[in-house]
Length: 489
Image (cartoon, rainbow, N blue to C red; front, top):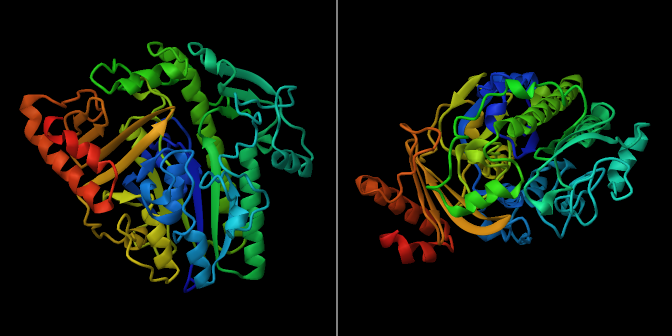
């Protein structure tokens, strides 16, 4: 292996971890990602510092929390003075490659940050969208504008833009009647924009191999984030009626922050009709399997190019997706494990325990410090994250963490909230709303909110003290609002 191994970082978007076979999925098929886990280490307690998408990605890019990066919501502006992967890794001779979704900074696309990329997608950059984003429209319709980059890709492949053949829409919110939640598009997998991401990744891997360059290749899929618009065979791969009801779908949300009830109504999905959810979940699973097949293409390219023994491959996501858990869709003002406990898999050429797992608490954003260590760079110690390179190599070492601390500020509506999670309990502070306290041993599906109950006040006090410690450690501006009400919360 090279002294400085290459890195292929594959990031999906809004990916619920129990859709992967290696994380226990009984139906959803992910053989290529499962194979990657067999080559490396599966992390069973990985979390993002912050959600949703852009804040999580900006934090991965810099290793810092959202209140430091400037991107604490999806509309934030990245502080360009912070050290980041694109400023640091080239100092060790790494060439930078990028493909797919960006959503790190609305002002500068990846090509302006030092990455080689065939096509820029600034901001969220969804490649198939109406310019003003009133709703996603796939296919050559009069009311849709298809990204020029995506059209260029299709023309290079000799393909036509795929028409939308079927779609599932929410029914209860007039503001979302033209926003597909799931759908079928014509053509095959190569018509899909995710195939473009894989193709551009492979093209860059070939260029790196030809030049014998050390590289950091960052590949970003848009999916399985909704809209789950996929071709056959993925659209019909999973029978909706075979999908069992989520164990927490029975939650009436009455003992949870009211913001969650609003989100449950927002998407126009009948919160009491699991059959409606089954239609969406089936396409979400199909999307996951399609991405898995594309991951297989990229892993095959590494093998064909003779790069496997010199390349660390990491697969993770920015955050999860409730996808019906607690009657909630996507992400939002909720810290359920379906949304915050994310998949993370690392296959290091020097892995000492192929197929192993670790239960240590880690953050997605620990990868920032880890990659600097891989490159042999000694940056300043990060107050928010740490290198987990020994764990990436399969060593059974401790991170020294007995809890994680995660942030959320806005999605659909402003709702600043914070979570502290130990191996046994979870506490959530929601500004101007009811808190949440769960015993994760007795109540793994988080259905029984113990917040405010006198018999659990001692546990709540312990977790609030732990939250205060985290807030002070990272300089969280929410410390003030929290401390004002802590003793009466």
